[in-house]
Length: 97
Image (cartoon, rainbow, N blue to C red):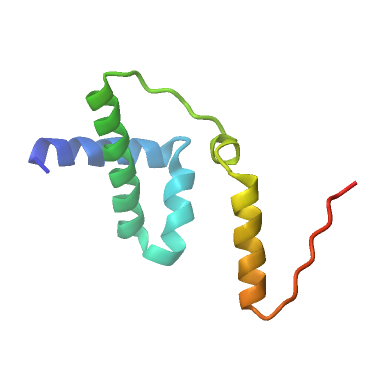
C-alpha cells in the first residue's frame, strides 16, 4: 500500500468512525481490539474502492436487507438442521401455518 493511500484511508476511517459508520468499528472492537477493528474497516473500505474503480461504477448503497435477499432459504435451513444434529438433537421440521 502506498503511503498516500494509507494516509487517505486513515483520514477516511477517522471520518467514518466519527460519523455514521462508526458502528462497524465498534462492532469489531470488543473481540479484535481497537487497532484491529480500525484495520478491518480500512480493509473493507479499500476493497469497496477497488471494486468501484475496477468496474467503473459509482457507489450504491446495498440496503439493510442485502444479505437477507441473498440468502438461500433451503441451504440455510439445511445448515441449521445439520448444526443441531451435530449437537445431538433430533430435528423434525413442519411448515408453519
